[in-house]
Image (cartoon, rainbow, N blue to C red):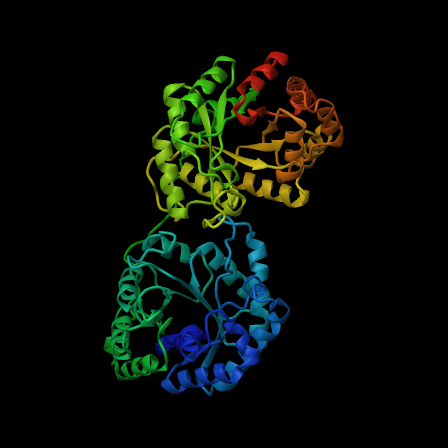
Length: 613
């Protein structure tokens, strides 16, 4: 199929929504719609036939979510090839001459780098696994639809082109103002599209015809590529518990003329549009004169998003950044925010820590999914009242990517310069197990967001003006059960922009030193976590209930010797901590000493026994 040659002569009309048509016909949304290709093919075939009879030039396969990640949720991964192949074959059998089949491919359903754990190449492999049976089934082109992340869309198109030189349509979904759901403006979106090797670019879903037309009129100024538009039948209204799309077929038919005059090459429908909408659009398309159709696609502006990246060098970011840059051994103390509003006690302890030479106060954000005073508020108070620099834990659990960016810029404006990017404990671990979690990104994605802000851009690639200058830290676990995965993730964090890493508490020096050997290629400064044990019960808790912490039997034996002896237990815990530091100090960039249960006296005792730190 020579799509570009066909589009030289006419506008092509796509079909409408598949998912909403299936729903309209009595299949509830808790089912896997793609499985219907196998267990109810007659229903899917009937939808295809109705769209073709309504006048669609191209129908799309019922395979939007038929990828590995989404099918695994229904225990259908082993049938992935069959589901996609049969969908393509069935759609192809329904067509006649001058009618075509597009293999429908949606986003993976999970974040890819830089926002999530799936690498770019892994994403391409997953897309290839879905696209291959569509090609084998005879599709004429591939439709990538309802994507949010253009980097993921780029990976998807590359996957198709590497399998076969087949026409592709690459579509994002947008908001009412024309920006992508990540907030990217139209100019930047088109500039990013120019980097994707697709035959047609476009938008679909989420919004109705008016918002799509506004986007098209702006986008057409900036590209001479072919453009596709596939609006929803308006925004859904909840009527008696059902989401109903109320935009009439006649209204959408009228909008086809507007789309054509604004320069659309492919027009179709998305959620809420059915055969009756496509019929009205076909009638309008057949009635158009050539003068109604715009073929003048000259760009008005030669745009560029290559903003000169500015970045504050690490030695100028903060005292911590300067110490890391100059290889000065740094000393953290971890203090928890209070459970109430009285922070005076934490201020006093922080002053004590500053007086004995501690460089940084490290403040966890809702550890063990607990509700405490805002860690950011406490960090600001400590810097204002004590004058000691802080490292703020920032977790992904509680905010979406809009809130994350807004808060980070606000924190920087208030003087917080050091961030420890943490995925965050899930709510089920805490005292509010029914609380919801967000997790738009994990710690890798969070590092990418911070690093982009440090380059003067937000996540969407839009400039923010003066860049932030956060010193970016991450966590790592030398005792992880799946150590290879932990090392891989640390590599990704460093690649995303991490400048140092803080470890889980170190009790076994041999395990820790082996870990350092394994990560030598990553070349990231390591701040070793040190936890002074206070009792055998504390040691057993750390060993059995804190994920990723392993307290060796030899240490448990030492602590058990002082069971019931509070003073002896404290002294032994300090000795163990000092021994650990002694064994690893020449291999690390610093230590983070915890103050168990708020006992800063243990930190004082450690530094008294180790005055050279």
